[in-house]
Image 1: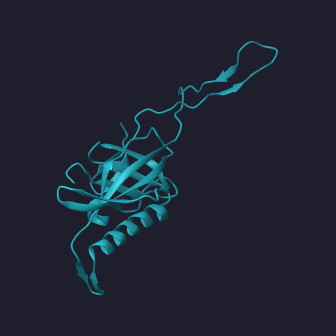
Image 2 (image 1 turned 30 degrees about the horizontal axis):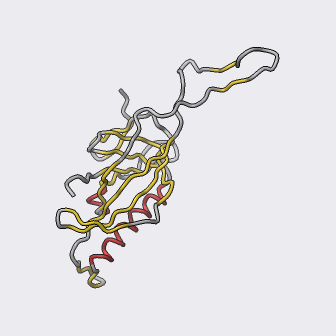
Image 3 (image 1 turned 90 degrees about the horizontal axis):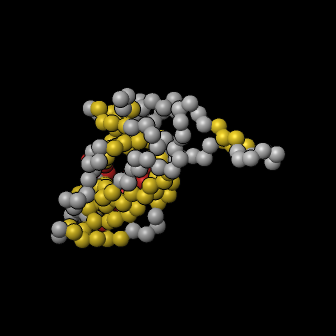
Length: 177
């Protein structure tokens, strides 16, 4: 799994702040990320326009800030490594049950958090106002470097495609540069 990376998630407050803890994917859920396809520049929104039938062309409104970008979706491939059986206070959990519990907890966090900030330490790219869009119903077991892991895909919607997020200590913050 040397090609797989960790990433960071932090729930956003209703006012856009983040009074919530930041989580690192591997230590919190045992979930690795193969690919986070943040888009640096995406499709430009069509400007507001009017088409007058008694005039040539269109009247288009362009903001003094220029053109705005559309929100986009990105599909991220995740993996959760199968560990040996583990013993807890409630008994022994098999390796497959352990993966099911970890992935379930991860997906539950995504579902229940609403808007998130997300940051990849590998690409050093982060975004805010990211939310769960869908979970692919196809999962597969793969073997790599002698280890087995469950691979699954999650689609996120990036509502703010412009604002950069960085990791600052134990928190994700908006990059003010």
